[in-house]
Amino acid sequence: MKKVRIIMIVLLMVILVAGQVQAQQKKVGLGIILGEPTGLILKYWSTNTTAFDVATSWSFAGEDSFHIHADYLFHSFDLFKVEKGKLPVYYGIGARLSLQNQARFGIRIPVGLSYMFDKAPFDIFMEIGPVMDVVPATEFHVMGFVGFRYYF
Image (cartoon, rainbow, N blue to C red; front, side, top):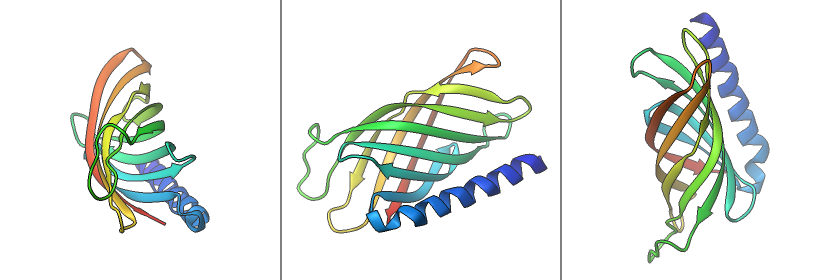
């Protein structure tokens, strides 16, 4: 359990430092996710429609476990039109590492909806992320959460 706490602290520090390094470009958002799992999330916009996100989180369902996931996301801004702000649907592919009694590694296919405020530097979002674990055994899980991010 001490190793999990140490890993969590180190990863949180890396996320915070990465956010500070990229803050001048205003492409980086740091926030919180609530649900299954709950934790911190960092998003980096690589283009106007693509982004990377990385999260460190804790799952309280079943066996307590520490999760790390990283995704490459595509955003569609044309599906829903809103008067103010933007409401993109996003989807992507990524990986998830779950540290519990036995480490698990899987492939994620996240799908979500995000509301980006017009004159405020933050967004709110909800996401469902089916996961197919491939190590140590093939298992299927569905992760879901809501969250918000502040953009630097």
